[in-house]
Image (tube, rainbow, N blue to C red; front, top):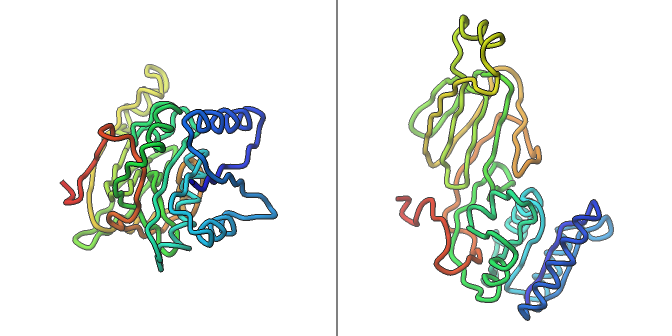
Length: 258
């Protein structure tokens, strides 16, 4: 049996989605215990109950933000002193879920088939010091270019950009607007602002420290602000056992980082 942790439904559509998922799981004969966090029972308490009952498969259903929150909590509770192996299944609710895209889970039938087969592989996780983790990328997003100082164990750079994305494999993407003063003056008259040319730079390191020269900037995980700059992030290799659809996964990097 699986131990399901579903995100509390905020609107009617989300409640209908949960009902349809449970019906589909029943059709695939995938049984389990269903839980939903509430003010009376927190995510931490639900996870502790599942571990006490010795469930070996935790399935998280909901938005990317909720999935990341439960994974982060699970790591803080379980992975610091694991007593047995657990496997994690994911049921993203967002149609444009980055988690669903990265795992190549296109619909609920793909998800149910993966859960039914229980084929899993190891994934790295991003660690946001001191005690937060991210499976979805971290994003810093500003309206205009701002100065950021990025430090790694090997070098330090200063850059002007409006977006920074860091995934769980410690691949960093910097996006900056390339607009000279003359272009900036003309663009408001001649060019749609959405077509402003941008330059993209990519960095890879074992660890990043990101600081903003102009105050603290919000840092997003799965669309939710979880902290502000400065931040220090690193990768924990192959920590999570994630259920995937056999032979149908997009691999960004293998275990050797290639």
